[in-house]
Amino acid sequence: MNEKPYFSQQDLDEAGFNPETDLGEPGQFPFTRGIQPTMYRGRLWTMRQYAGMGDAEASNLRYKFLLANGTAGLSVAFDLPTQIGYDSDDPMALGEVGRVGVAIDSIEDMQRLFDGIPLDKISTSMTINSTASILLALYVAVAKRQNISSEKLSGTVQNDVLKEYIARGTYIYPVNHALRIVTDMFAWTTANAPDWNPISISGYHMREAGSTAAQEVAFTLANGIAYVQAALDAGLEVDNFAPRLSFFFNSHNNFLEEVAKFRAARRIWAHIMRDNFGAKNPRSWMLRFHTQTAGSTLTAQQPENNIVRTTLQALAAVLGGTQSLHTNGYDEALALPTEAAARIALRTQQILAHESGVAQTIDPLAGSYFLEMLTGDIEQQVRDYFSKIDAMGGMLKAIERGWVQQQIQNAAYKQQQQVDSGEAIVVGVNRFTQETELEVPIQRIDENLERQQVERVRALRLRRDSGKWQCAIDKVQETARNGTNLMPLILEAVESSATVGEIANTLRQVFGEYRETVVV
Image 1 (cartoon, rainbow, N blue to C red):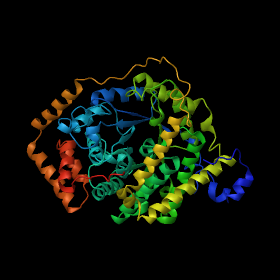
Image 2: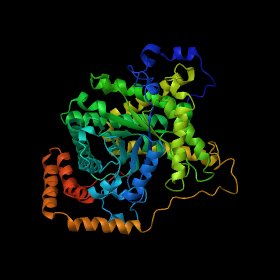
Image 3: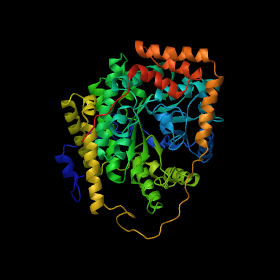
Image 4: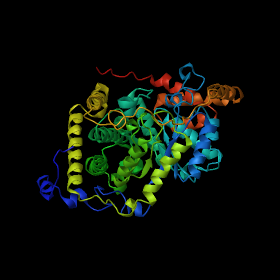
């Protein structure tokens, strides 16, 4: 961030800031001030609380609790075995079933997860990547059992595999095969689920891994460029799929930097889509994004302080023009959030929306000398990263070389050094500490859950139609080999009661598994 103590019109003039081209009007290119002309005066952001724990029944209860308390959209957290394509009875799943999210093995689990929730009346986000095609198919199949067609479904599946190779690690297949599945989903949703976002291109996890604000934007948008190019190479028309691309950003502690980051990201993406890819539809130029407050900033020490951190981060997201927002529970440095913590997190958004007045004025910080300079500074840093990535042959090459991962690791190391030295103050951790801590109730996962989930999936295999199941699995394997769209066959497989692990393993047999580049 620029170290000058204050800014004036002269600084903007020297930087070449042009209000007409750089700022514009809300809802107009380059969308610096927001993608809608009326922003929150027309419609508030979607209050979407990320949740999932234990088995489908436990998570279903939490979703109904959140809906009853005013959340406007669901966001599903899956357990680690589901994320990396292993069933609950697989030896690889031992000890992880239902721990960091809900365990989903089959269509029966997905049906229990959304029992009593009409899928045509609610927007659902699913944080799932390598197995995203399978989970989307399960969601569509459950909707079908509710007599709801895929055309009536709205929501998002994260489906951002590139950031898994960079920062998170729940990848399965080599990059080229993973991208093939992503573009298959683009094509299928365009034809069959026009209100569904087939990807949420995510910087959140890179920021959690330690990236700077500029790196978060640069690497996220570079991944976006790679996805758009892969879709074009697969024969898709840019204006057919680009309006349904969505993004997912972190909202961190540096309040004004975060507001500027969101504004810069919108402006850069608008130019990329219009100028680089030749998109004609203005909706293709719009960067629509979900925001989550920064989990990595939450502290186990004095956890009640996290309520303040989350509130400031949420406010930055709102002033930055987010379309959707999740606020973390104050206890998440200790465990999955309790109902009480989840309620406080949701109430934080509701107070911002209905009591603070910030939703009444569109982009109220626009024109601030400092904010406009900071927005421009972040944009320039992002474009500098683009130049380096282009020189390496594009984002896929940069990922395969481990360069992106190294940049984030270096930034994380520098930040930790600043905390350790006391240069960066973390209240309650390296400054303003106290000897006794508030006793915080902890969310506990039932120890019997894993055994019960294992019994469920094994019982399913015994009673399903084995002939129908085998035929569907064989079709998935054949389609993986011949290059045609996988989504219709995966949908057929889940309807035949094929499990997440069985479908993922079938694809493993054809595609193989990715081995990461070790960065030293």
